[in-house]
Length: 415
Image (tube, rainbow, N blue to C red; front, side):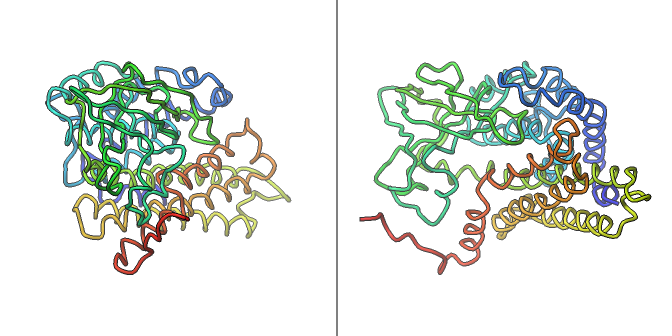
């Protein structure tokens, strides 16, 4: 049932990409995850995911989505690009949400670069991305002392980023710190945001810069060891008197306003990755309750079990419906796109968490055993409650977009 609904209304290109991703997950990712479940807990982050996995993603043409075709990438129909991102994100996350996050950072940052980076930098870095299947991109926004809370109605100087960029001869000097950055531990190229005008609000005084990993003054401080999504190495970065030349400035002062090409697809992809985790949870639970016998009958014949399975399927389809509507609005640049994107991300994070909980509980004692495998969907689902804005911040943003004239106003600093 879930598979039939998921396939409805796809273009031929989308259908073929979905089939390739599904085969990749079923033939490569899922067997790797099940056979190497201990590898997820390797405290040497660079050893967790074998290079063959990203090479496999390269072979089926999904590692460089968003890169212009003239540079060797895979261009998607602009009228349905975000929906296609969502479709592929779901399929890969069904195998592993960490791998999905590794890949989608490349997609989203590639879209940002093709829109904002000067041509000579596109030529240089898209070439690097195409040449090396292990090359990853990262988007550095979040800081230790400020993350999604900055997206409340607090567009004032004191809410600005602590990472600072100061103009100097021939470029900029950047000092600061970024944390909870997807691909942050092992990326080769970073888009870094910094406050460049402390006298104005965050939306008017934030600039973005293109920063190669080998830049002097740039340090990858550590890998953040997360509960779930562990095959994507989340990282923390430090900038100490880091010099960035003028041509590596992407957007001066209006970087957050220009980054909508990254943020909108991001919300849809978050919901879609979450959806993939939910589908995997349903698959595991449906298989288990139709094969495990308790009380003299298979579990699905117990009414309480059947009711839970129906609840899971219903939640998954509700998430899919809202995500597809939000993706359509984003592709169409509709007036309500931002509201719907935030709604989809929020709804998916809460509903799929419940789906994952059902899956674990339907497995009984086996559900909490690491070597059984189903607990992974619960851990992965839990991470989405905090990715790309927390649940409560998402709700604030939804209300602010619906009622901009009357939603909460900033009251000023504490005395």
